[in-house]
Amino acid sequence: MRPPSSAGVIWVVIWLATIVAVTAGIAAAGAAFFATLHGHGSYASAYRNGVLVTAAITAVALILTLTDRHRGARVHADQGDHWHHEH
Image (tube, rainbow, N blue to C red; front, side, top):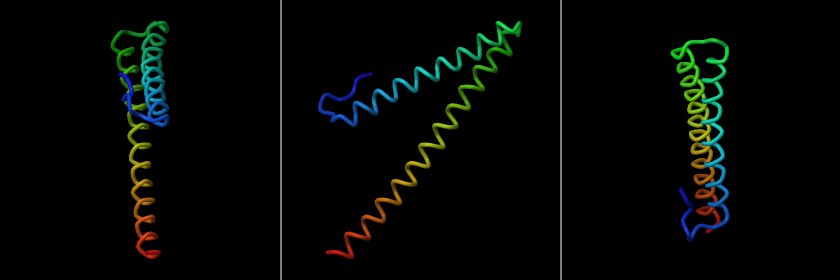
């Protein structure tokens, strides 16, 4: 995965943040899986714990995305009203 060649600095920052977040998520799920196995858990419980960590990370990402979209829509609506009142 590479950022578009015409992307500005902000897109490179977003791209790097995405790569770091994905890598951290994979590491967290793997850590949960292997920690369960190391604690003499079964493969089924290790798999379950890995999936639970993945689900929790996905839920947090979804909440942050929806919150950001809602905030962005509100900002654009406020800017639109401001523009109409000035011009």
